[in-house]
Length: 116
Image (cartoon, rainbow, N blue to C red; front, side, top):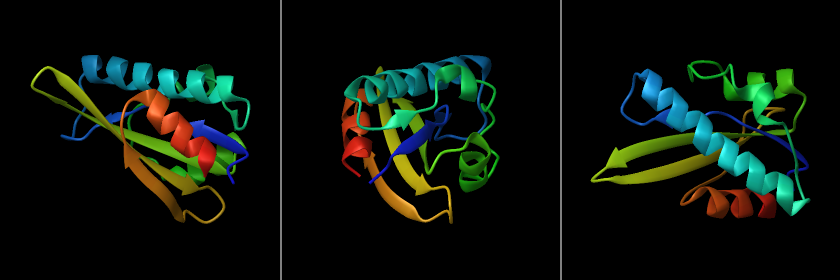
């Protein structure tokens, strides 16, 4: 079970992020962080701890170890037809093992992460 997590800013699934995409990605991550923080099951790093990690190029497990957590939630989003689709991967920081992936609204993602 995840006891401590860092939620990375969401990256656009289409590649290079614009300034607007970076804002959207941070807002998505903040929503997941807020929901995880409120459930009380998972200790989650605050948005201010991850807000500079917006390029998406760093190794997720390495970032998790640097942030002092046991798991990392990596988010992606796709803007299609006026809708925002969000997907997530949960990765163990110790060894980079993939633990879970799913899609949905930030609250759905947070509940799934808390269950793992």
